[in-house]
Amino acid sequence: MGELKSKDIVTAICMTAAMITSVIIICTFLTTYQFFYVGQIFNSYYMLQMGVCITMILWGIRFLLYHKGKERYIYFLICITISVSLIFFIINLVN
Figure (cartoon, helix red, strand yellow):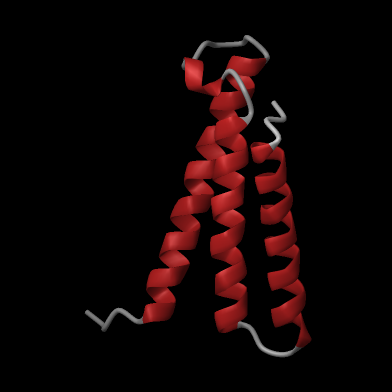
């Protein structure tokens, strides 16, 4: 078995966050559109906003650490912009 590198750990954390966010998206849409009641926490878009926000921060850090050239900064800025805009909507209680 090989040695676990920091790049592998960061990638695994990012992929786990993306999978959790995918489950949150499915649960939110099922509850919001009243197909199936998953739980009261999924009645609004708060969990969805939090999941995407955290995932975008993690992916932004991953892009900043492991990509080269201009794309490194472009992808990082896109991810951070999405995350900051979601924080704005969370603070202003946009449901």
